[in-house]
Image (cartoon, rainbow, N blue to C red; front, side, top):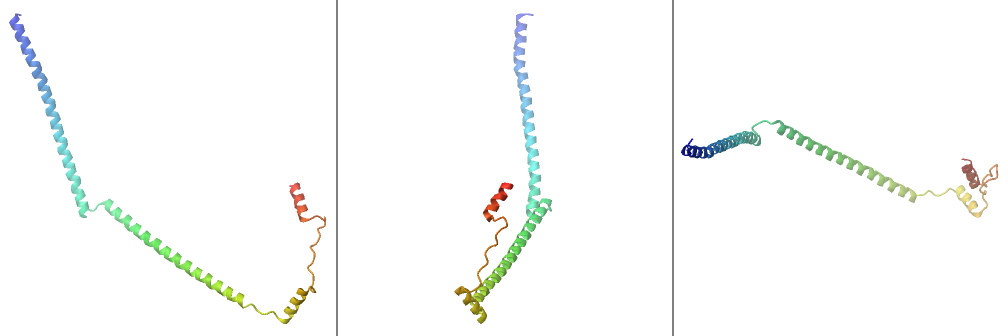
Length: 161
């Protein structure tokens, strides 16, 4: 091979190598752009599908299990609130009635205490004798058989235990 042929082969090789590299890079760029465009189109399609379903649901045109269940839960919550309010009202009414009865009973008791009956003549005489000291004297406490006081008996019992 002569110098001219070698030079020409080197020149062709040096020219083809960057062209080959450029072709591979261009192919990779085209594939990436294609993949990106297809992915964007698919995403847009999915968004349109979901948004149309959401628009139907928002407009109330499409029956949705979630919306139906949410309505059922809300109505159940409202009925529970009404039930609790009714129970509170009944308990308050009952408490007011009981309080009124207690007030009336206390008022009647105060009125009864004000109208204390007068003692009979026999009771007056018995009271007069007691006040003068002529009445029967209170009985002395019975002595225990062991002649121990209550305090001493409790100490003995604690020591035995």
